[in-house]
Length: 200
Image (cartoon, rainbow, N blue to C red; front, side, top):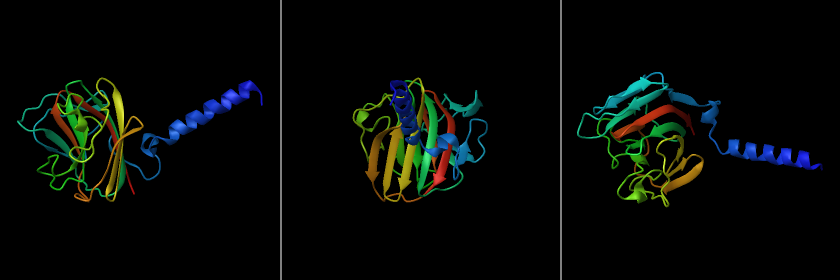
């Protein structure tokens, strides 16, 4: 086989492999529902006090006005799903994506599964990419200063999280089986550009 054709096929195979590792949400394929697209907060309730707003095609928060973290809480409840989240965090951001929350009005990392966004967490074992209290991350990746993607799968007792295509945490736990999703603002600046979900 000519060298040029061999190189072309190798490049194509690598591109297909990279695409296959991404969830269909990135292409808004069949079965996916966009929950947030950076143009509206429809479909979300606010719990806590922060300055959530639409800015440059993203939902942004950078000023917490309550003593406890603020959350955008999905109006719908979800059980088994694939979740695609595009976010940008400042170096001092404390944020996260919460799953299957038991009480949509009282949200903590003890009443939901939290996939963390917290590069400066004092204990990095549950920092960015970890599922707080349930699945540590080692080494902890950094997400600050760039657009990143979480790919989260909740399937029965098994929950997995991947940051920018690389799996960071996995847990088997049946404590929370269904509930709303939330997007947290606890400190710094957090931006969410897209959130999409596909039921399993």
